Image (cartoon, rainbow over all chains, first blue to last red; front, top):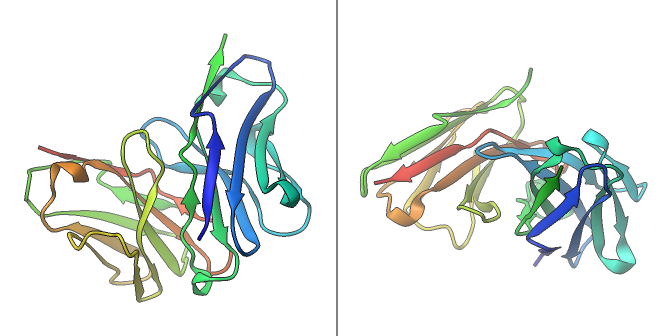
Amino acid sequence: AQSVTQLGSHVSVSEGALVLLRCNYSSSVPPYLFWYVQYPNQGLQLLLKYTTGATLVKGINGFEAEFKKSETSFHLTKPSAHMSDAAEYFCAVSDAYSGGGADGLTFGKGTHLIIQP
Amino acid sequence: DAMVIQNPRYQVTQFGKPVTLSCSQTLNHNVMYWYQQKSSQAPKLLFHYYDKDFNNEADTPDNFQSRRPNTSFCFLDIRSPGLGDAAMYLCATSRPWSGEQYFGPGTRLTVT
């Protein structure tokens, strides 16, 4: 069974400051890892993903994340926060090998990012 | 642009009155998913289709059914909605083995 833990249901940073959203996962097999962003009353938009290969992945809107197998972590960062980054962020995991190629995502509980002017 | 479309965006139904939510995709993906997202919670997988093969999550209530008449369309039927079924319902698609899912904008269901 897989699970995802996002530390901090709410994170507040000042505009221009570093954004760090934490995600830890558990999985018995190599995982695929994702970060999604959700704006109010909208669907989920993929920010970035890790499947295989380079452990530092870059995504849209200046976000990046690093897969650290030894720490079972996939933290999301952005060097300089912008007001438009205010949203709900979900970390998610899927099983790379099972599900017959169609594995649903297991999401963390989400982190609400607040940007202070 | 290739995309996932959900209609309607907002749906109001009465307690116990059947309701159908629809999802269509222009991505030609084999796999389609339905998630339920209650207020301030993470999305929870209800079921998915891999082509015509239906896969139900073990804890999905029997009240929820799904149909996929062709590659492009998938429907979520709630036979007798209760107040606890009020939520955002998200449709997603993926290619097999890619892991990455593409989400529609969601349908917010209100039960009165």
